[in-house]
Image 1 (cartoon, one colour):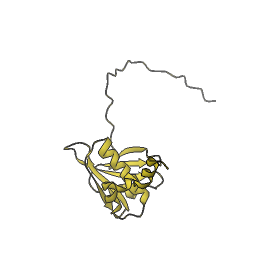
Image 2: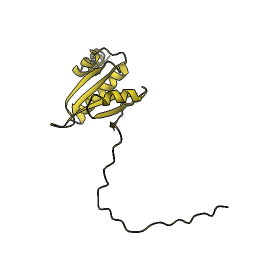
Image 3: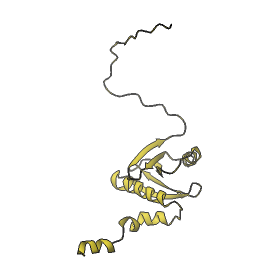
Image 4: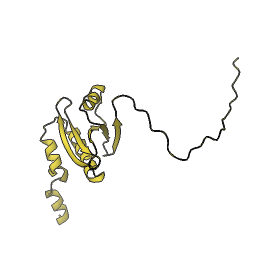
Length: 149
């Protein structure tokens, strides 16, 4: 057996020994897939997206790990709800997270570790108007209406 493969057998999985993962595991939640998903989102927010003050919070009502952090220094705190794609989502769970009082991001975590973020709001939000050098040229397409028989 080569020395490299021998070292690979002895070395623990780095995720299992990471302090943030250990903290999430200490929250004693039953769904290990959700804890794993929360850790992947934590790493994305703190290492890739460079969010500030990212921390984990247990939600006993939902039995999940929620993440809180700031997108940049001085920005408001946001709650991130990491959710494995196989786990169902209810209006009640979204309402619970929104009622915590912070802006919310839902993060769907696929089995291949793909992360998709969706901003959730309390009620309807009108979209921002389009930006750019748009100009109405006054041209309209006219379509002939079919005569009904």
